Length: 303
Image 1 (cartoon, rainbow, N blue to C red):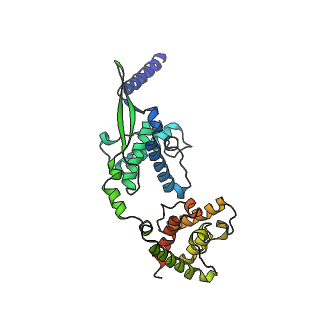
Image 2 (cartoon, rainbow, N blue to C red):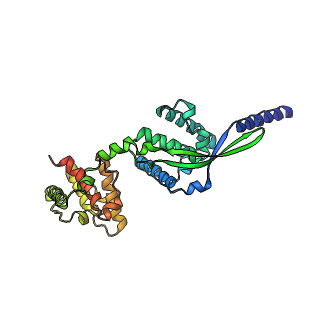
Image 3 (cartoon, rainbow, N blue to C red):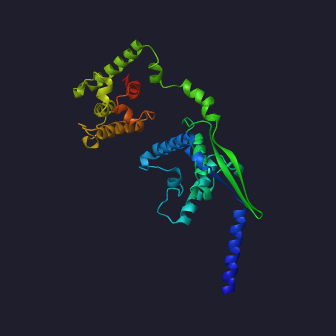
């Protein structure tokens, strides 16, 4: 019996060593982790994940720490790996990456919280599922490539491409051609900008008459989110429960809560204002306020 056990462990250890010897491991240079371009790319990916998972009330803070287990935190490590394997197998098929040579991640790397592999995977997902999302172009990092063989350990320093010029190529040109109409408007003469502002204010006031409300100052009066929520409900034909927002907000956080709820409602209604941050509305940013009101104006002006 003892001999059988010895032989079992001996065989298992041999397999592990052989597997280890055949692997090449890439590690991001510690100095490269401080690269502003890399930090910007990580931030863009985290923001994309959080905006996508917002309806599920899931918040990701770290690419390595929050994704390695396939979002199955309660499972044991072997179960996490099996679940992650199924997820990646399906994902690779959807990404059209059946050729292993093109895949820069695997179950082991993701589960081991490998930042390089995790970023490669997320960038591929963005390109496939949301190609209009702006990612920082030409992000490269220096990596140490280590290879273990029977003769020893070899290491080399290489440059790894995380994003290339495609993020700033024809797609970006097309995006500039489809520039937001409000951003185009604000580049025009002041009198034309004021004309559009007056038209939108008139539209708002026409629809707020039944509530006995009038808007004169576009930026300040929408900053706390109250009139914006009431306007959305009026235009879309539903009542926003008073318990869901602060009717008389007294501080910054209550205003942000109101505006966030308003933007969530607009997104649910199919009015894409994802480029607008609640903080921008609260700080009375004219561009952000105009974008939101224009989205409502464009949809309802003919009704």
